Image 1 (cartoon, rainbow, N blue to C red):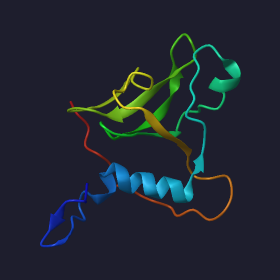
Image 2: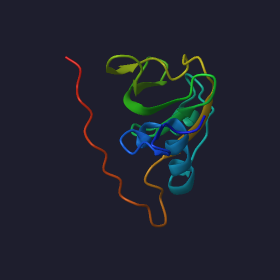
Image 3: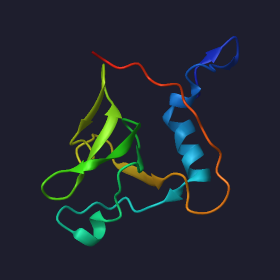
Length: 124
């Protein structure tokens, strides 16, 4: 799906929120990690750290941040905006699309740009 356009140009006010743009950025500048997530498997779960970025593919493209909070089986919660408010919930293994990517940013090596995004408004 092409980005939204205004007078034939990409919409600059919302471009950073588009999943394909975020995916391209993280593919270029972040470490790509496993997408395999095994409840109760300590070795596997160590690969999932708070602050990691996850991207879900079609049909419901979505981006979220891995939480530092975990379920009893060790699976981390997901911080994401799905609806009227940002939430932290058990969607990491329950999102209706497959997990396509798992990134860690900034990458361990190399030059990575600093990206400052405007602070999102909080829901009351």
